[in-house]
Length: 151
Image (cartoon, rainbow, N blue to C red; front, side, top):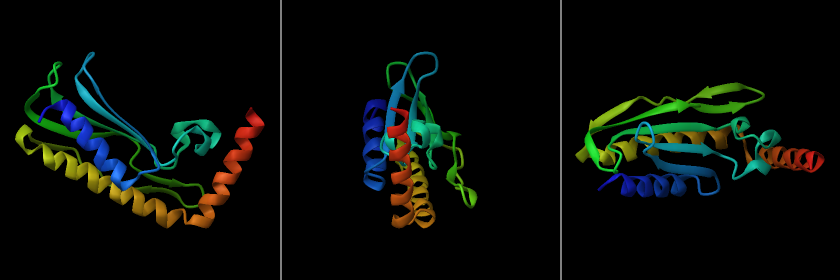
Protein backbone atom coordinates (compact mmCIF):
# COMPACT_ATOMS: atom_id res chain seq x y z
CA UNK A 1 0.00 0.00 0.00
CA UNK A 2 1.26 3.46 -0.86
CA UNK A 3 -0.22 6.95 -0.83
CA UNK A 4 -1.94 6.63 -4.20
CA UNK A 5 -3.70 3.43 -3.09
CA UNK A 6 -4.73 5.14 0.14
CA UNK A 7 -6.25 8.05 -1.80
CA UNK A 8 -8.34 5.60 -3.84
CA UNK A 9 -9.38 3.65 -0.73
CA UNK A 10 -10.42 6.79 1.17
CA UNK A 11 -12.38 8.11 -1.79
CA UNK A 12 -14.28 4.86 -2.34
CA UNK A 13 -15.04 4.54 1.39
CA UNK A 14 -16.55 8.02 1.64
CA UNK A 15 -18.46 7.61 -1.66
CA UNK A 16 -20.09 4.46 -0.28
CA UNK A 17 -21.39 6.47 2.69
CA UNK A 18 -22.37 9.67 0.84
CA UNK A 19 -22.65 8.84 -2.87
CA UNK A 20 -24.38 12.06 -3.95
CA UNK A 21 -21.98 14.48 -2.29
CA UNK A 22 -19.05 16.60 -3.38
CA UNK A 23 -15.74 14.90 -2.59
CA UNK A 24 -12.17 15.69 -3.50
CA UNK A 25 -9.37 13.43 -2.24
CA UNK A 26 -5.96 14.51 -3.51
CA UNK A 27 -2.31 13.84 -2.75
CA UNK A 28 -0.19 16.96 -2.77
CA UNK A 29 3.58 16.84 -2.64
CA UNK A 30 4.36 20.52 -3.10
CA UNK A 31 5.53 21.94 0.25
CA UNK A 32 4.24 19.41 2.73
CA UNK A 33 3.24 16.00 1.37
CA UNK A 34 -0.27 15.08 2.51
CA UNK A 35 -3.66 13.84 1.40
CA UNK A 36 -6.37 16.50 1.56
CA UNK A 37 -10.02 15.49 1.78
CA UNK A 38 -12.60 18.16 0.93
CA UNK A 39 -16.24 17.20 1.51
CA UNK A 40 -19.62 18.88 1.15
CA UNK A 41 -23.02 17.23 1.37
CA UNK A 42 -24.25 19.15 -1.68
CA UNK A 43 -23.08 17.70 -5.00
CA UNK A 44 -22.12 21.00 -6.65
CA UNK A 45 -22.55 24.76 -6.36
CA UNK A 46 -26.22 24.60 -7.32
CA UNK A 47 -26.83 22.88 -3.97
CA UNK A 48 -24.67 25.26 -1.89
CA UNK A 49 -26.08 28.51 -0.56
CA UNK A 50 -25.01 31.29 -2.96
CA UNK A 51 -22.94 28.69 -4.84
CA UNK A 52 -20.20 28.75 -2.16
CA UNK A 53 -18.89 25.44 -0.82
CA UNK A 54 -18.19 26.96 2.61
CA UNK A 55 -21.95 27.54 2.96
CA UNK A 56 -22.68 23.81 2.76
CA UNK A 57 -23.96 22.61 6.16
CA UNK A 58 -21.44 19.74 6.23
CA UNK A 59 -18.37 21.35 4.64
CA UNK A 60 -15.30 19.59 6.03
CA UNK A 61 -11.60 19.44 5.24
CA UNK A 62 -9.48 16.60 6.62
CA UNK A 63 -5.78 15.89 6.19
CA UNK A 64 -3.71 12.70 6.26
CA UNK A 65 0.00 13.28 6.84
CA UNK A 66 3.01 10.99 7.01
CA UNK A 67 4.21 10.36 3.49
CA UNK A 68 7.22 11.35 1.44
CA UNK A 69 7.10 13.44 -1.73
CA UNK A 70 7.30 10.30 -3.87
CA UNK A 71 4.19 8.83 -2.18
CA UNK A 72 5.80 6.28 0.13
CA UNK A 73 4.63 6.08 3.74
CA UNK A 74 6.90 7.27 6.54
CA UNK A 75 6.88 5.54 9.94
CA UNK A 76 3.54 6.98 11.06
CA UNK A 77 0.36 8.32 9.48
CA UNK A 78 -1.72 11.05 11.11
CA UNK A 79 -5.22 12.22 10.25
CA UNK A 80 -6.78 15.40 11.57
CA UNK A 81 -9.59 17.82 10.86
CA UNK A 82 -8.56 21.12 9.29
CA UNK A 83 -11.96 22.77 8.83
CA UNK A 84 -15.55 21.98 9.71
CA UNK A 85 -16.51 19.45 12.26
CA UNK A 86 -20.20 19.04 12.25
CA UNK A 87 -23.47 19.88 10.61
CA UNK A 88 -24.80 23.42 10.62
CA UNK A 89 -28.52 24.04 10.72
CA UNK A 90 -29.85 27.59 10.35
CA UNK A 91 -32.66 26.93 12.82
CA UNK A 92 -30.75 25.03 15.51
CA UNK A 93 -27.15 26.13 15.06
CA UNK A 94 -24.07 23.94 14.86
CA UNK A 95 -24.03 20.25 15.76
CA UNK A 96 -20.45 19.28 16.50
CA UNK A 97 -19.25 15.83 15.51
CA UNK A 98 -16.07 14.79 17.32
CA UNK A 99 -13.02 13.97 15.28
CA UNK A 100 -9.86 13.21 17.19
CA UNK A 101 -6.45 13.46 15.67
CA UNK A 102 -5.27 9.89 15.11
CA UNK A 103 -1.67 8.73 14.65
CA UNK A 104 -0.88 5.13 13.74
CA UNK A 105 2.05 3.16 12.41
CA UNK A 106 1.99 3.14 8.63
CA UNK A 107 1.28 -0.62 8.54
CA UNK A 108 -1.99 0.13 10.36
CA UNK A 109 -3.31 2.45 7.62
CA UNK A 110 -6.71 0.71 7.81
CA UNK A 111 -7.29 2.44 11.18
CA UNK A 112 -7.02 5.80 9.39
CA UNK A 113 -9.66 4.68 6.91
CA UNK A 114 -11.87 3.45 9.78
CA UNK A 115 -11.63 6.79 11.62
CA UNK A 116 -12.56 8.70 8.46
CA UNK A 117 -15.39 6.26 7.72
CA UNK A 118 -16.85 6.55 11.24
CA UNK A 119 -16.73 10.34 11.04
CA UNK A 120 -18.63 10.50 7.74
CA UNK A 121 -21.21 7.99 8.97
CA UNK A 122 -21.91 10.34 11.90
CA UNK A 123 -22.06 13.34 9.55
CA UNK A 124 -24.60 11.61 7.33
CA UNK A 125 -26.73 10.45 10.27
CA UNK A 126 -26.78 13.92 11.83
CA UNK A 127 -27.51 15.56 8.47
CA UNK A 128 -30.43 13.22 7.81
CA UNK A 129 -31.86 13.93 11.27
CA UNK A 130 -31.62 17.70 10.81
CA UNK A 131 -32.66 17.79 7.16
CA UNK A 132 -35.52 15.37 6.52
CA UNK A 133 -36.51 14.97 2.86
CA UNK A 134 -39.25 17.62 3.02
CA UNK A 135 -36.83 20.23 4.37
CA UNK A 136 -34.11 19.23 1.89
CA UNK A 137 -36.43 19.73 -1.07
CA UNK A 138 -37.52 23.17 0.20
CA UNK A 139 -33.89 24.23 0.65
CA UNK A 140 -32.95 22.84 -2.74
CA UNK A 141 -35.85 24.72 -4.35
CA UNK A 142 -34.78 28.00 -2.72
CA UNK A 143 -31.19 27.49 -3.83
CA UNK A 144 -32.25 26.79 -7.42
CA UNK A 145 -34.29 30.01 -7.46
CA UNK A 146 -31.34 31.96 -6.06
CA UNK A 147 -29.00 30.45 -8.64
CA UNK A 148 -31.36 31.44 -11.46
CA UNK A 149 -31.58 35.00 -10.10
CA UNK A 150 -27.77 35.28 -10.04
CA UNK A 151 -27.39 34.09 -13.62
